[in-house]
Image (cartoon, rainbow over all chains, first blue to last red; front, side, top):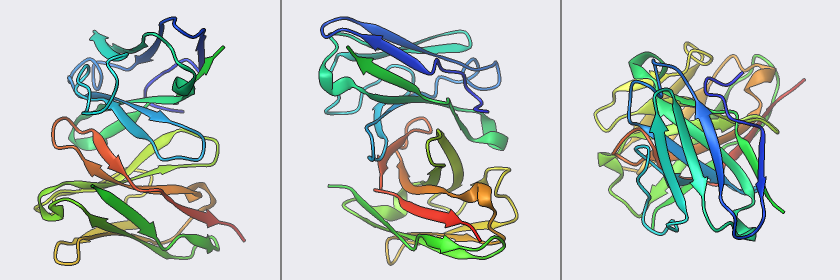
Length: 111
Length: 118
C-alpha cells in the first residue's frame, strides 16, 4: 500500500481539464512544499513534470500545473491532448527517516 | 544532455546477490545526489536508496541491511549491491538524479529489470 493516496483512474475529453489528487499526511505532503509529479508512458521511465508543488521543469508545457492545500496536492492538466494519456505519480519528501514517498499512481485516459 | 544508463539486471535465485551499475554523463556527477527507485511489475514507484555528493546515505526500510549504495565520482558511476534478495525485490530498478531543489528526481535512466525467482 502506497504512502500517498491517488485515485486509480481519471479521464477527460480532448480540450478539457482534469485534476488528479494526492492525499498524504501532516508528516509528508502537509509538512513540506516538496511535492513532485511524474508522467510515465507505457514501457518508459518516469518524467518529472512538477516539482516543489507547482514549479515546472524547462520543456514541460504550461498545461500542467500543481497546487497544494493542507495534506492534499493536486495536478491539473488543462487542454487535454491525446499525448497526455499516461500514468501519473505524485511524491513527497517525508523527513529524514522515510525520505521520499510515492502515490500509487493514476492512469489518465483521454477519451 | 543528461544520460543515465543502468546495467547488471537479470534473474537471480532467492537469497542471492546482484550488483546494479549506472553510468552517468552530461552533468557534473560529483555534485549531485543520486538515487535508486524501483517499480515492481504493474505496480507503482518506490524509492530505494539515496547517496549525496558527500556520501550521506539513506535506505528504504524494506532494503535496509541488505542493499548497499555507492558511487565513484572519478568514473561517474552509481552502484547498488543487492544481497539476500527476495521475490518482492523483483522490479525495474531506475537510476535517478536528484534535481537539487526539493527531493525531486529530475532525470531517470531506462531501468534495469531484476527478477528474483527460483
